[in-house]
Image (cartoon, rainbow, N blue to C red):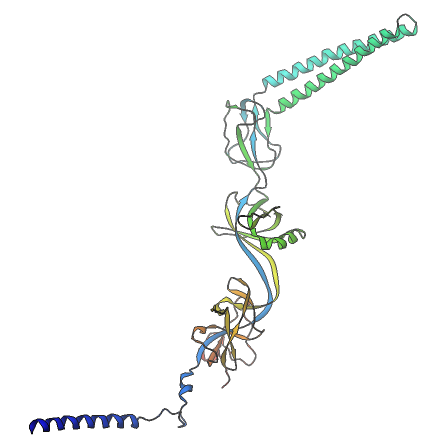
Length: 408
């Protein structure tokens, strides 16, 4: 009896607990609105998401090419002797700026000077022989007129005159050659520029067309070489007809930006890289662009007219392509877009209308038809347009004044 009584007590306890649990569930009040009406469970899940938006703007968007270029001189000449000789004097210093025609080196010219004197003496000798031959011809012509000699004697005298004249002409050519050889002993600058290191000293022996004495490099103006993609080639060739496209260059270590123009496009595309070599010319009066330095190139190759411009941050990549969320009647509407061109923080797209508000921040919490509380972002670099006249938008970013009213 005691065991049976114990089991009855246990069973009764479980029944009481079960009844109490059912009573607690039924006594919980249903969720209600402030007016007392029950809330639709689906409406409870549709919580408004706070987002930031910008207005799609239509304007011309320049297509800017970024590349790395190398500073190269327009003229760089290795100064070499054209005759084998010995350096007599050096008239410049390392790193000196020189002008075109300025004397750089003097070589030992004693041999060439002696050869010039010898050639002049030979000319004087042969000139005297020519004068004598001319006198003999004149006398022979007089004797022929008096029938004292034959015509053959006159012809012989004429041949001697012609030979003497040829000899004198050869002597004059020898003098000119000696002068040229003597001029090789004075090395002058072929162009204005900056001299590099002087590689010889007085008394050094130099070989003809072999030993580099110094290198003269022109620094102003100067060129920058870089590569353009093949798809940009038509625009580059077209710009050459109008004086060349504008190009800006910034040294890799920062500093000032230099402006120049495209001046040269190579005559072939590199098959391995699909690019073409080009060259832009820059003024370099202050000498801040140095040959061999790397610079960042920026060139406007074309302009997209009437492009719809959005921040790149508003574009969401998906398996079906790029999309954006547009606010319509207080709700998020998904739009597929086609990316036309992206540059920096901006992108030109199709699929969005001018003036529509596109979500930039908070898009990760959106689904189609999600209610939103909209904050219109301040314009940045012209990427977004001004807020509409009916919008209540504060300039200090206060949350209450920065919200744009949405449809109920």
